[in-house]
Length: 303
Ligand SMILES: Nc1ncnc2c1ncn2[C@@H]1O[C@H](COP(=O)(O)OP(=O)(O)OP(=O)(O)O)[C@@H](O)[C@H]1O
Picture (tube, rainbow, N blue to C red):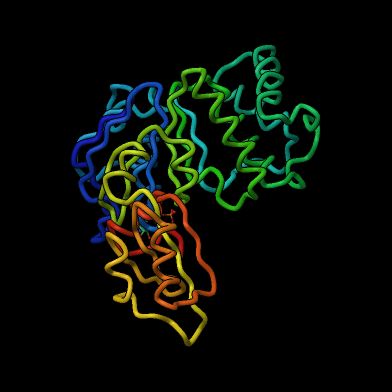
């Protein structure tokens, strides 16, 4: 669906995307995971064929965005980072305008709007104004609108940023349905749980480069341990991280906690207690993509 080789985007002197290689296969959910400014949106805009590449090769649906932009865009769905719904129109009209834009007849457009409102769980809001809708509803409507042309490939830039947990889960559920129907999904996110939930494969981006690639499970087993023990100590009573190096494969000190990477978190915690240390709180959890990112870059995904 997408083949990028040494793909590069420069804004003046600044290189936002620094020669990345990416391959997205039909039917998969593929992710770009990275913090703000990693170059995810710049990459997505090149794939969406709305922003020309500065260098490298790019094929989307087997075509070159530089020469086949309109033909590619006709087969894509795009959900931008900021909702750009038309507040002057009702929910239903927002879909109908797109139907007409993509050349559907009035009757086809009406049928499509009914189908997509049902998909977006917004049928009872068909004639409502857009402005007062919740953030989750607006996102679902934006996704519904991106599906008017039955795209084979759907690009979603930070689909759940700013949504509450319930709205996120509802939205993920809609994306799972699309995937089950065979739509290829490309998602950018800085939420590791979103990447873990949604993506079959992903690349981790930082500073315009790809720093790792694989399935969430592969990345976690390659770059982290099975478990992590998180320790917080009372302010002013912090313990130097070196005190824990013999208890774990690796120790990371963050401003508010110490992370012990180990295969046996509970056993490590017992050892901490046996040394007479009394953390304010302790937590044994499994490793996540956040731990992978920390290992690869020395920083956390979300400040
Ligand atoms: N039009 C532009 N002109 C100049 N610099 C830009 C432009 N668009 C993006 N950048 C810069 O390129 C870098 C990558 O931006 P990009 O939006 O691709 O990152 P991102 O990973 O999507 O992060 P975010 O989640 O904040 O969008 C940033 O430093 C950004 O300031």
